[in-house]
Image 1 (cartoon, rainbow, N blue to C red):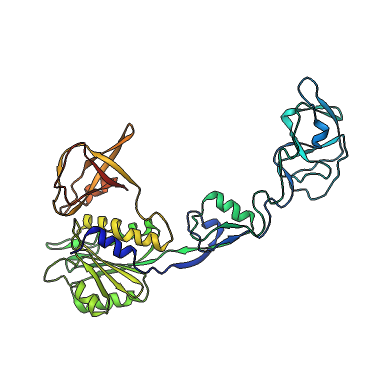
Image 2: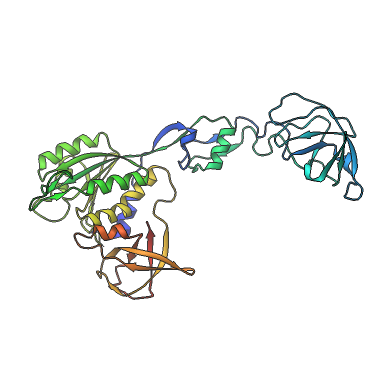
Length: 402
């Protein structure tokens, strides 16, 4: 048996193989770049107005104020955003411009419309203006050849706008791992089958499918495998050539029918560790087969979900290139006393709420069979250190927010 910290270290320092895929830019928000983006052009591509107003020579507006406005002649023509023709403005003249329109030759600044007044064919300017005011110069935001985004940058809506401005129709991102899901146990039946004594419907594959998808991965369900070594071996062998991660629920605890470890070794998988000093989920196992991560998780539904959150989700996130691998963490106060299992790291589903600037939580018992409904009500997982056998009201512990 190994410690929680050692299990996590082993898993997250294993060799990772990233999958790169090219996707349309419109689908890239939230994804992690798998390439360096270099600017193919200047942004903006020309000197342009950043405001609606009048393009002027700044020297022509010197001394202008509310009491003594400067009178400028209104030149013929108007430059709107999208217009490509060039015009020249002589000293003492001005011309209307809109945000984004090219600056006319002979002008060097823009007076905002709010600081002007139309007087027949003249414009009265009520505010002195500095050279370059309300003007965006070519390459001011981004210069051609600049590195705009590095590999591993997480694309957000603003970044999508920049990429669109650079003419990027598609981008290379880190693609999702394919996760193979197995449910083991001769007691399991499909969800559309009637339950008889000694039988259970397969709920784990549905929980795992949702967890994988929510984590950013893709999944393939390989169905229910009975407690038969040959059948399990054949099914897993098919998945080894297709999946980046394999999750096997059930079959890892000590018992006559717990055959996962034996089957994995028979297939040539490396048994990295089996059993972790935690509760629930002590019987978790971890194997490697080439670049494939193989997790043997407990059959108990609540234990399965907690083990997925603590160990499998971070692997999926790392393959996808994310820096933040785990759920957001807060330190919350216990609302009441409750007992945990001393000598092991304990995980407990909890209800977290905010009180003023602090977080408090109520424990929900998820450690016994049949408590999946309780975990469904939880919005956090509390982590109780192994040297604590009883959590007292007011004590603070680490909580992952679900």
